[in-house]
Length: 243
Length: 258
Image (cartoon, rainbow over all chains, first blue to last red; front, side, top):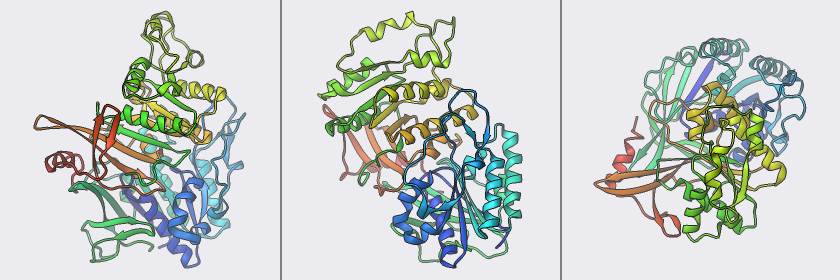
């Protein structure tokens, strides 16, 4: 639904990125233009990891590299990074991580990223956006207070873009029950992923914690990361994705 | 267990309890590189290099070709503090075969700057200028994190080091402790391409060691927790065995079903 934000939260290795990409692939299949903002994993590694899973549809996702470069720990004049970066299709991503700029350290800021997203969404008629992860974006802000107000304004910014967006949230291995973080309040839907030890093997599960305006299953369903993406194991019903 | 192992050029986190076999596993990883004719570097922060070399040689490994970078925080003299650049200049690199006991005694003589992520980055950059490495171990970042700067500084420092390692194309294992139950997610876990966990448990007076893979981007892995055995040749993952149920029960308390 345009203007809505959906949240995927879960610990490392639970499949957040895969689920978010499935949401974009769904759009690609319907002929939509979609954008992924990569903040945790460099686009070239994502391409290597996920192309085998999603095939050529994956190459049609536009990706914006939002990774911070290396710090030189020397005082250099700031330069806005938006001059040097632009979104391109996964199929055109250079296979190696680029070197950090030598002399001038381009400072990547949240406002630069926001500006880039805005321009890309407008110019490429984007209808779906994934921010992977909003936790890393939060780390651009220096203080706890800044982080809260930033998130509020960033999610509002996403909503104003009139696209359907999905943001991922990195959690520790011990998810806090009943979290009231701003991400949850401002999301139309919250999908949670879990990872626990059952017998002597790790398993993952999914639950829909909140889904405004639609009836949903609140139980935790087992899922599995397969070579073709996340699959729900329980026969009950498919996890709601790609809406 | 890792279904093809670590992907070259990527950085992995190895988290574990004390005495679970982390350093030994890192030793195996570096020795494997040496067997293939690669250049390998071991950055030791928490343990003196002589301890590391003694244990590696004790396993009967021909560890002479492992280059050791001693980033052990010096004994503090509570006087002048060096700047970051000075720390970087003080790095002492040697191979295990060149190393002698003199490494141990000369700490007092030097100015004792604090080691931080920025100074570690500068040390590594300097070292990479002098030699191209294929494999790297940083053992461990625990004291850096405990002694170190505020959370924000830590995030920035971690981001920067991960970027350096990716740009240099090194396959790296960074050793870490296991976070406590209510810790926030750490940036090094977010940025790592995979997380391996080693546990040491005592159940009914008997010690057990276990290993599992938590996140492995771009490669399949075993979902099971496997027993680990320490032998005179290092450690062995008993990939076809399972842990006794009482050990699994204790381990499962850290990963409860929601």
